[in-house]
Length: 132
Image (cartoon, rainbow, N blue to C red):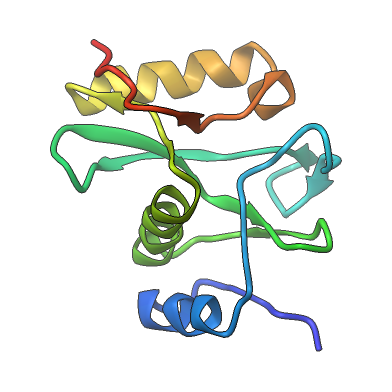
């Protein structure tokens, strides 16, 4: 059975899959290859800038990869936020934080222009300093 996440499911559905042991992660260049998720060609990540749970703003992926290396473009904001929170809680890695939504969006555009996730993972271990 293939697990599909889509925009019709809310964060409660994501939590149900996580309780069943399903796992999802951002693009990892050491184990994933770019694939078309309907955004106009092969993709590694598509970032969204949202309110961070600890204040400020964070950039999180809206493309998540399952254990078999299949990507899913998460179109539902709450679903993407639930996956990002769960990922941080279970891995100890943190997505980058920013003081303003503009700074986050600017960083996301720059990351994309520099090759996106193919250049390295978005989340890092440790407490990342807020960026301007």
